[in-house]
Image 1 (cartoon, rainbow, N blue to C red):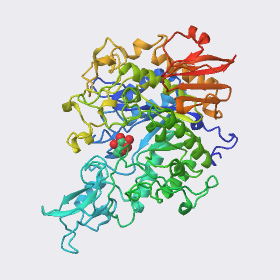
Image 2 (cartoon, rainbow, N blue to C red):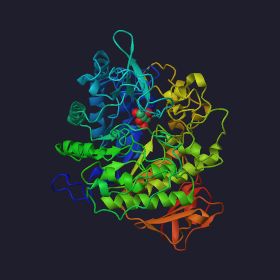
Image 3 (cartoon, rainbow, N blue to C red):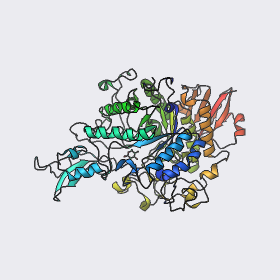
Length: 600
Ligand code: GLC
């Protein structure tokens, strides 16, 4: 089904995002335009020619708004200002203009679940008494065991844990210094959750959407899209709150037969994944979130051009995730099932099948994601003894990856994901084959998860290290030419030197050239708008993943023995490092390699 709001005259399914390759820029680590060691918007503008040359269609920028940076900008103090660390609104406008001039769309990050505690609203809430309209914009509650009606209590209002570790509640101090109410923060104490039952909150976020749409943003990546609405009464819950993993093994309840695309009785929708031990969490994937996205959909359709939203929603099973992309809600949702499948043919095949089916049932394009700023880079994950594992960061005394093996597999996985129909998301640096920084010293770590768990969780800094652009420059050229270079905000590992963009540019067999070739092939063959069918050679139990997309046969070898090239086919692109002149003579696909084949 097409988006009902496609401008007149545009054929259904032709929206730009339906097959877009979107490149995630993590602004603080992409390129430093002013030499202070922190990436910024000027740096992004300077590097747009690189992104255009890479062959992506759009750029998604992680938050660059005014923020005390307690969670690297996912703690927003002002939704309408650029933090001076990253530049100014004029820098944003210049970047957007230049991106558009180069044919690149721009998606900005929207963080609606929580604000920073330094947001004007939270300050007003602290200064106002319990029960006030200022406090009602957040989730303040009296504690348990207090004097009834006093607003006081010695225990948190319920037993919820923060996703970043520790309790999800903090207590505030009254004007007279006495302990007062508690406020909810699913993440850091400096990220108080907004109350989405409050009309003022709803109106403010509509206005924030309009602010960026008016400036010309093409879409929004919606942070924690499954978390905005909490179950009434905020009941206790015994589960473990986690965004990425650590969720208990889930038992899937049978789903009722699929609904017609766009149908909307939330009560009849597929069941949520239910753990054998825990009921569904009272703070994620509540039915009420969908009313918010229907409302935002209407806001976006007031604008010309096809503006879009993509949900960051860690929701299972795939049918539940698909609900975020029904015809009158968001346009896309990140496919984390695919990301979580790891380097495992059976799991990957299963994730491909279920996510294609679920998104088809609502008429939305599937998305394909392997890495982002919250996960260990896939180059590194795939080099671990268990390449389907999902660690929360890697430290020097943890198992270290086999870098060469991980890179070979990562390149092969990327060719699989770029040949699947739908939209693909790339995380900055994966086109260079960058590994995770797995030996960052503890005193360099900045992720609040590391500090809130007292180091029990290593955290996400290892995938956020500033990019290497030039091997022979201070900070590997992270600071763009012309600016004096301060030390990058996180130290770069030595392995980044030979992987710098200037070392790979024009080098046959380099990861950068592989990405360029794969993106050009995908675009020429319109693979993103193509069809999907498992091929005869598909044998996930033996580690072989094989599918047709239009006239292209894709064969990924995740197994332990080489796989024969099917008769009558010739290799036209390989994830291996052999010269292209060898491809036509290949009659076997080595392990840890993916090839694209066409009929002779
Ligand atoms: C999302 C972001 C993550 C952030 C969290 C809280 O998961 O991707 O980086 O820490 O939300 O905003």
